[in-house]
Length: 516
Image (cartoon, rainbow, N blue to C red; front, top):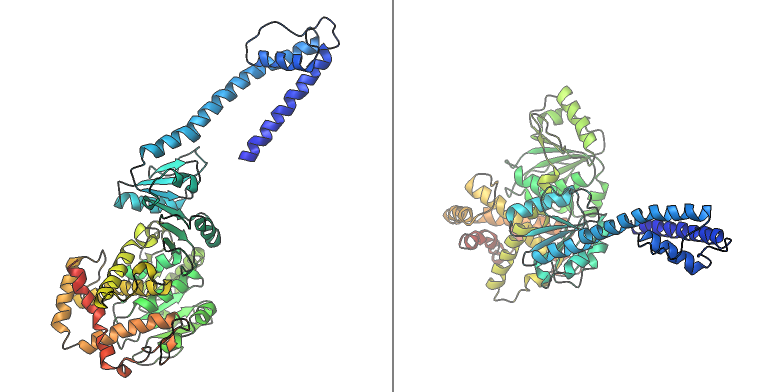
């Protein structure tokens, strides 16, 4: 836009001087004309275009009078340009500064663009924190697409941030570009003290502690299994589709769907999952691959067509259509409905509503403050870690000092807290995990802990093992974080009794959460 304005300005200037030289050439040939020099011509043009009209000099030739008429009409344009410039200055510079000044006491949430993602996040923020102000950084003021969720300011996020004396009360969001672009833009604020949220698949180990990264696929998978948890330890689940969607769903499923120490969930996966298998190279440490073993979850990676085994499709407890391309999911759904007598539930990543089918992956559900900003998850994880620190006499590092892996480990434990409560209360936990829910769950745990102590401990050890194996840790007699080695990564029955008893901590946390 700036280059365009400069080009127009340069063109106007060129036309102006062409007219000046034509006027001078015509009038200097008339001895009686008062316009004989270049300063005379410029003076006359300025007096004419500003409508002052001193009358001290004027053109006497026909060509000079034509040029004079052009200057007169240009005076109208000059006036319009001046008025437009004044209005633009007020609208683009003065009013935005005034709006920021008037809202200086509020907490600001500053987005790098107006789009579906940022508007969805803003909607959730406005609902949860009505006292905050959502600010969209955009030069496009022609149409307000924020739907009343905030204000559009034609300044960069850095400029907007400079208006705040306390940057801690500003949250910055970077969602407009690719994962690399978002991260690059966010790193320009590495020295600021404000929270920064970046939509990128990259891990946080080397990023400032004020940064929180999120992926739409991770958010989607976490929400899906939270809303649709497994209900029986022997379910058969079919995933049809390749890409980030299917990989994220499978990864989260293996981490969170731990509901019985001897469960045997069966995941049948159709699509290209080679990268997933090579990335998680320790899968066979806790799973049975392409084979069924009693008391162990199994993952079958099918290389053929999704409809090669009609009996599997018709007897599966659940079928997930999870290709990144929604049109493929819709095509598979159409064929399933038309040609197969499926008895299980069909869940599809499709934005539109489909009668009789559970859809997921909608933008308005994925990009909520809870999932994007990890608020409740982080708060729960931080509380868990702080309780652990107190039990260790303060010897453990503070939350801010933890590595990305350690933080994610606490988050995974927090994710599973909802599963533990559901198991104890024998009901799904749809909403927020409240102190009252934790109190009820802990009462059930206390009533059953002596009789089922080993069951509780084995379940937590299985969950803990899975997280480490999914992140490619392996067993070694001595712990080595750099090499991802841990002495406790072995079957529960091989652990010393003292180490087995430590798994009670994950369940006893319910009491701490119940007490606030």
